[in-house]
Length: 231
Image (cartoon, rainbow, N blue to C red; front, side, top):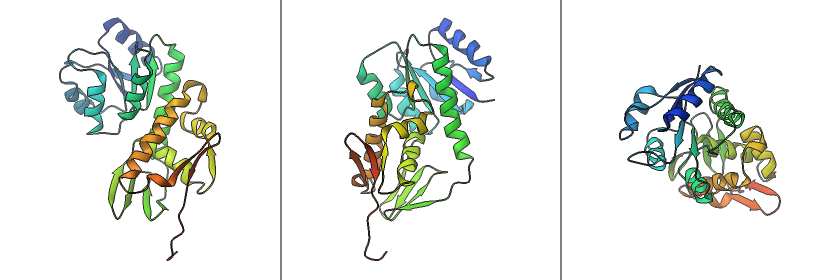
């Protein structure tokens, strides 16, 4: 049974989501103090976090930042706000998905199932280390290491990089990445992939590797593999 921390201050909505998720065998917990959510997060160690943007004291973006300093646990945002910048901000902070209120519960459960499956089933696979442009990618730990240091990726970033480096120097279409990453492209926006790829490039830039992920306009993305004199 997967454990979900639901950070929602609307009591009736919290109870409705909790009851619905319980029918799918998820254990759902709330928070006791909206001013110290990290205490509940640390003690519960959830498998997934669902968080509203508009909360008492501090907003969901603040708590997403706090969680990301400690953990790469999957995070889904819930919000009644429909401004595109909210979705972009959530992705930039490391969220895995964004659901706008009001929502159909079938959509929410599909997103939860897909995220948990790709996060935990994927991590339980026997994944070999991969070398790419003199960097070592550890897909089990979601890290990339070269002589400049080590960076830690989110699950989405790591899986996008996996999709691309499995086919080095080939163009992988946006549709293929979306389908692999989210299982059903109907439940995800094209813009979300763009945000995730841009965030991946930014992280790889810390190791001098951002230029090796190329956008092929109208086609998709390509992970270039450089040829070194000593290869």
